Image (cartoon, rainbow over all chains, first blue to last red):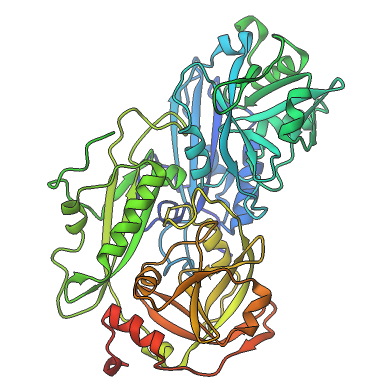
Length: 278
Length: 278
């Protein structure tokens, strides 16, 4: 195993060279983190997922100080989004990695404002044509091979559609293009397993740890029968889904508004989005 | 649609910025081209695959002059390998691409020498544990989402094993980690379809066009019964497979040596590897 990145090796915004394996093969992982009051929200969950991704791909995890350096100096008065990219590093003959390879850590912070209107009024979500492929070796981690998400997001260009719902090749509900999915059935809330495809959400993991959500399998055909549906992530917060459209634009299902439901309240408490900020 | 890259926009070796979508999502395609006597070999096939990849991903194809500029000035006395990376370019809010986005074309040339010994004596190939996922939307094109190949190539570290054989989640034979597979049955030669996964090889396409090879489906269970097996690509040429190992190292099958068989002769004629150079 390689030594961890040293604490004095700072993350950088800059560029990656032609032969960086992140560029060549998508050989790396990333995280997108909400920064509030200059501190990362759900940092332990983001780091757990990053570590799991590194372990799965065989990339050495940077030391905590290098990772924490990515958000140090963030402004305390405004929200920001921190994006971290960690690639395996440079080189190798083809797909084989070099005997010694130093991971490359990059990061960028961007000002951010969530859409409180979507928290209140809910959103329209469209079922994507694209079916996610099932690959347990890559499922759950936030790796850099995201062409399925890119292709799915290309399917619509209507600002009135907030997200695209993704199901896999077995018609199992997995996620939205950049958010996780939650549904209520018999008064309990569930979110999909991510053992075959999809990204394991950090907010989702925190809600499971809180006992508010369980992991389960939902087939597309069962979705219209659920009592309520949400899409959420650790940056945007939780949007109630009020309308689910088929790929052709027809309405598959409408759900009643559920602003300020207990699941959203808990999610926003975890993210620091206080009810009075709506 | 965006205008094509202008002829005076040269390809460059350089770096890509943090927000290049090739780095962020593997949102792009690549080609690896043999340069002989300063000219690309099977250029039309490489360009056809690159165009198909761009069409599938919705990336504008650079103009021919920009692509040809990647190999101009190559030495005429030695072999080189040209690698071209074409990304969708910079930016976008998450997976959605910006309204205007300029593809980024990068290239690098490297001296190359094929392994004539492998042409003559054949190679040992190992069946990989990893199963390729089936995703028809990405199958066949040489996109930048190559983590399955990276993980498969990590499975062994024995210089005596030349390649890893990849089968998909349905146990259909697809390819080797960086080469295509060919097999002989009842005197005819076949190569897998690449409509569910795998990369459509340029040498493979040329051999199909020559009438020497047909596309067919081969299940893993049928492989030991074939009369001969090869792995090949447009850079390395064609290696007869003399031994197929299981993932645990046990021998699944040995094939007799077939140096200089008619398929290899034709492949090497297409690539300019003359028999006397063996």
